[in-house]
Length: 138
Image (cartoon, rainbow, N blue to C red; front, side, top):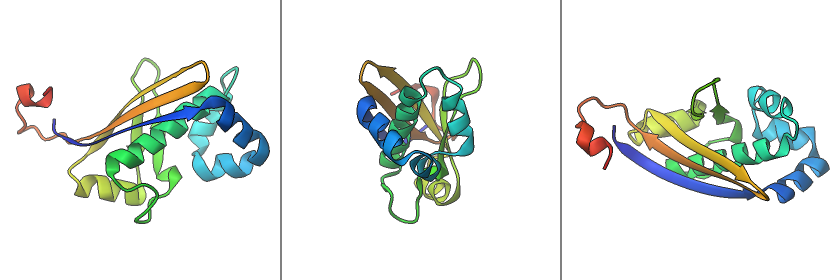
């Protein structure tokens, strides 16, 4: 495995709560996929989960090195978490093209939220089997 990019981001949960209260569906559907919205709304308090996903998208954009430029949009980066599995950041559209061009086949993701903050770290990695195992952990 080879690392092609790393990004980290932190989001203020109270700040995102205010944004969601003000803009509601307009904000949610602009930034999050239907799957992400459903996942968060299934939680007792969805806002910390939205905040973690927002941080994940920002971290993913940093790992790609693009921000919201070069034709990339928020909904092209989707946080998925299967039961019993670590979350991943699935790229589609232009973000996937850029990731592949930069040598990354997939995006590893770490999420956490505690108190007033949500944090995410994203790593764009290749699945190149020619990379020695000892180098993959370096």
